[in-house]
Image 1 (cartoon, one colour):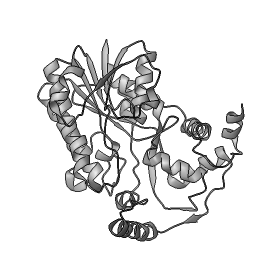
Image 2 (tube, helix red, strand yellow):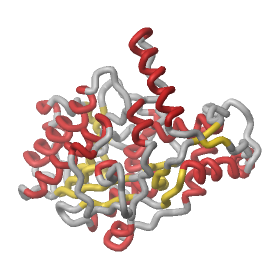
Image 3 (tube, helix red, strand yellow):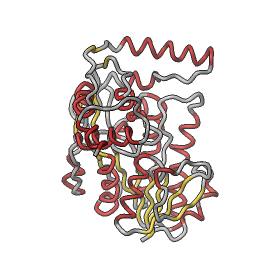
Length: 341
């Protein structure tokens, strides 16, 4: 079997690539020519080069492919030109779906986001039955992912073999960029988080998310969505786990949401005056006002998804960041002992 992975050099995509290679599958990775491919360097994969925004560049990469894992996405919470996010996430998804259909691909797995399932004011734990609309989405990234997910579900409705997965917040090793969540972990390890706000996310091991994609391809029902998640944790709980693993001090001060809101306003003013990209995007501040907790039991019962302990995933993340020079000062917790070993 030949599987094509878009975004194979990204955080989730690189782990999916490794997983499929370990399964003995033939893998073709679709990247841009200028992409940083350190995360998949040395793996026995075929390389294909295309721009998802250009439909005519996708026919050749699709040749002889049985499965497509469309993982690629522009994951930014701020952009000077938001249209770029829609071009990559919505137009790109539309183009990949059409190219896969024209090539006769057997199975198409679309990587959406848990953000398409969590309303701003949830009165119960959201799950795959939650239906949201564009007006419910906070910011351009979430809007683009909802629109792209709708493209995928419509293709399934039209008879294409499409399954959607909705990862929550993946953590673990190999976050080269790093992702927005990875930056939170790094900021904590480097002593840049003196306080926290009352928010929360569902966290999951990135390796488990990779395996969840394969499980969705094997067992998922066409047109269904599957949340790939594990533990609902407040930010305070997550930082406490990091503190226990790294030996770094746990921040004691909880800030009201007004403080990061004002800091974000100042950041955006600095961008307008000096062209400096905001470090505290308003989109992220608005998201943080709501806990993104979910019920991910469907993937467990239907796909056989079995997430591993999140503490172990965070320990692997800490160890990887430390070994790759992201952490400035030596660690002193259990993760430090692993590094020394």
